[in-house]
Length: 386
Image (tube, rainbow, N blue to C red):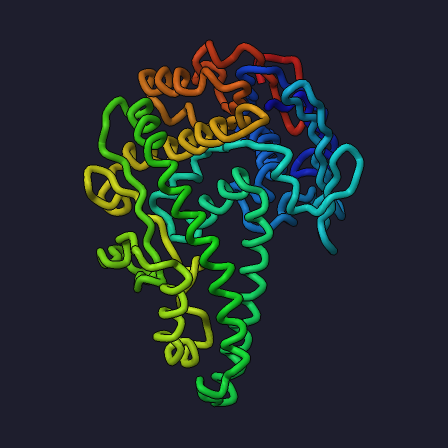
């Protein structure tokens, strides 16, 4: 898969933009603050319906505008698709494929990309929500129907939390909450699907993660992913979960989930919130048999985060009928020495299309600069001295 053309309207600092891309490596160059990252952020949004920089869609709409439009012409298997999304300041966002309206959440099934940026260091060092979001975005790219399961789970979770808060406020006892039992079953059904899908994804990532880490770092530090499950007693606020919360269980997930909810009913009524489920799970990153968070150096953490994204891209290219995902590297070469730049260039060289942003042209290996786009103040320019 590749992007042949990107069009933007009122997106970030772009009033309008028309950007052609070639197969293979594409380098977007410009000084900081000129709009390089905005281009790849737009493509990342088409693929995941999220930004790697902000949590609110509205932040991507140009100041003074009511909406922003991202439109990309995609090519794969000899087929051409026009994918577009309108991000609205008020009201729901809208999406189209070949000018026909679709549900916005269906967009990721048409465009597959993997983006790595300096912000991804938070995958290793940040809170569990970022790691959950990483897993779920990759799940949707691999199996688009999961988007509906995730959305349904969020709706049920909100309804259940509302009921718990109402019960806490009125002093209703757990045994009287027959309605809560109905929501429990729906939560267990949807949540168990998510937990099991995440577990399978973690298993599949194991081998490509190890290979990607060694290709980037030049050493094998035993990178490993271990699920930390709240239905087994893990707490998302724990820095070091108990071993029992990390161990795989032979008991069916739905049964474990039901048991956890029953045991937590009193605490949930006291706190007015759901305390077990995929929304409170974590993913523990291990290096040299120790948690990377708290033990890994900056270089090791950076290598782990990059390897995780490269492993994701490798997994998608194995599964996809539409070819390789588009691999996006946002402002990462500046942090690397010459050896690591060469290793990274070798690791990504085989992908059908790679989009790279850099502030300095010479930071990027020559092999990745075959097609260069220069940006200045939200404009595509011909001057190579930008």
